[in-house]
Length: 499
Image (tube, rainbow, N blue to C red; front, side, top):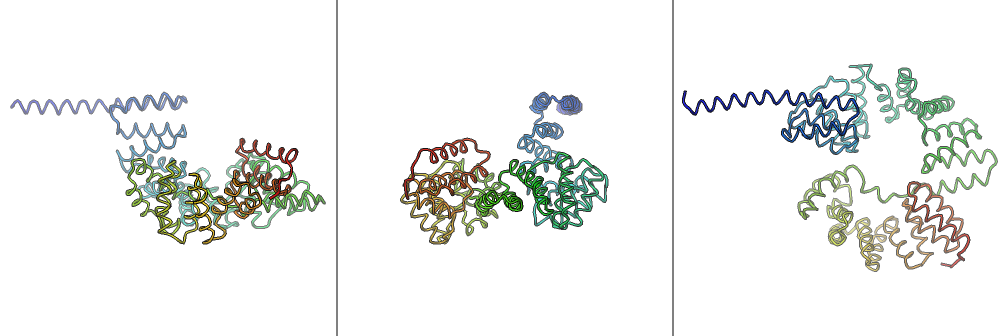
């Protein structure tokens, strides 16, 4: 045998032997890792898997198990990273796709979660758990809800014993406003698991929507007794008690609902009804005014926080950090979000991204381009004004706000901006007028409105606005502390200063 052939044979034999030894070594690591996880030693399991991956970074089994460790730690980004490597290294496996979809879902990335579980469903269309999860994710959006129900029903047909399958079907039917069918499904769910407080809550919600108030009341109570105790549950009970004329009991339930979830505006409306029926007129009037003050407010921050905007941000941020602005613009122009936000002008979204990164000059520059390209957009003009104001350019910002209000007199961002300028100028009456008209839900802006009301002698409106701030800013303790100081200051020390 020639020398070169001996060398080749020896190499192949050695490679085969090493490959045969490598896999049992990984299998041993996987066994050790499972034992550590079962013992609750997640950090040790993580360290074991990561050390082993140094020599074999793309091993699909190690990556999956490491993903499971991160999943248990609720570290969704790292779980996603490892599941994706596992799927790429060995495509077509159901389990990594199943958990990858769940990790996406926990990150509120509904679209990717749905697309990923759809891949699993195409590979294993008769896997009952996959069908159930696919139906659950389809039910998360209105447009795919009916299709989601069909997948849930298919899952139940494949395996009637699936955990919470009747609840999932009932919830889908409830979301589709088929309250009769939903109630029947939820009743089945409660028979299977009488301690399911969430199923009892939705059964009560169905009964309320069908006008069956006694059954609604009893089911809300049952759900609360099973531990499903939150603001909406107490609100539902209180409303049912109002409908049944049990006004004293309703007061306690509704007060509890408000204590648990201060932003439940409709609880104040029902509480006003209960107070009125008990002859507590002054309290009823206060609750009615508070309800009116809380409703129809605009959350200006929510516009740019939807799933499509978040997805655009994920894709564009690395390009902006690398100063690849043109590539970012081209990317944004292709995304659906560009056509949702102001006439398909990608410079607007790019400007908001620059501003959130603290790059105010870049934000102002591209928003000016957006303003020129979409001259009829009041929102672009208003946002440009906000950026200019943050740069200390009050006069220029005021011009932008006036332009926005000329296009749309109800443009909330421009009204807030003008209110802020007038507040800084101590023109309290005008500040209050602008801020009041904006119907803002932002607690910090409402703080300015409260102060302005006090300064022009509208103490009752100021106190009511303070209560709205306490409700909408319940999780902002520093602001609430400042509010209490403001209220005490105006009530005890400061005289009326005039407009």
